[in-house]
Length: 470
Ligand SMILES: [Zn+2]
Image (cartoon, rainbow, N blue to C red; front, side, top):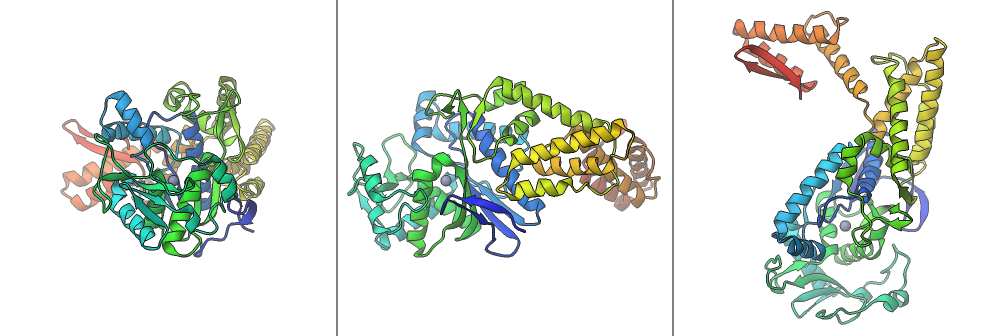
């Protein structure tokens, strides 16, 4: 049994077959940091975070790369409006995006490349495209020649005639054909600029992802993700540039796209002006409730935002945690086979609404058993497994993990492992103090390191050792 995904390239369900055994190389287009993150950005981050967590839990070794677009027309405009230098505005916004992702429980990517850190590689790729006859220089700009590449349009399913109907040449552009798109743009005075064989300028938007994906994952990587709004032209152009330069295909094997978040039926985006500030929402609601709100929709379905829906998600989250509070500690039982229904849902193109339904069935049955005084351990174990894969972390579960780690440490240092976690911690700290006084530095250091590994940080103060959660 394998995971099945909907591949935009070919528009069909396919079973996910990694190019090398049990390894998934995954690239997701990250935000253009022109303004504060909105609720739609959170949706995308959580959608691909769940996919990544699930694949890792299914036993794949996942390498996850997502980029930051920190130079682009929209950022240059926004910086001019704010009266800030472009790098300063970008840094400010990157900080806010990372803060929001962190609050939502989105795991840090393995690599977080920035466009401005890859300019020489972009210049190199553009040079290759010119050499191979797929691009040309004109007036300090460089354009990709769309007609030079048979098969252009395969991702979005558009043909050249359709594209031609919507194409136009903007004033100041030097395209030979309205279909062509910019790989490099000559900079106007005051704009960010880098040296290139074609004069001072900056990269077009699409080229950065071709460079960063291949640099960090290799050509022919497994999953390329992003929002449906990126299918055309961004992803179509990424494919064209990468495959034209390499002279082979595929650049990426499975293309996964998340749908948009809507407000009153309209797409939430900076361009429509319909935005709800993500950090503001994360301030008013438990971030885990916001995460649960996202998970209730399938990533390929459009979803609607309203305060009511968010309040309902907060109430659902409380139902989860109030069940978990009824069973303190870590269940010793095997997880109930309900976990298999969760797996079936997630194997089916990461069907999180179905997975959530399974989770609430587990809660109902677990509660029923606790009410009846019956054994509920297997349901609690199933609950713990599922919430952790979905990235929902109850505060109690975190404490339960800590208690389990401390019990393990107790065993290691000859302390009663059945004692209360607080007593175990006291004993461990006392043991280290004793070692220090006796000058047994190796033992003392070893204890300090082992505690740090389970998340307890020791500090030595004039009043003796103090500890806090790291
Ligand atoms: Zn991209």
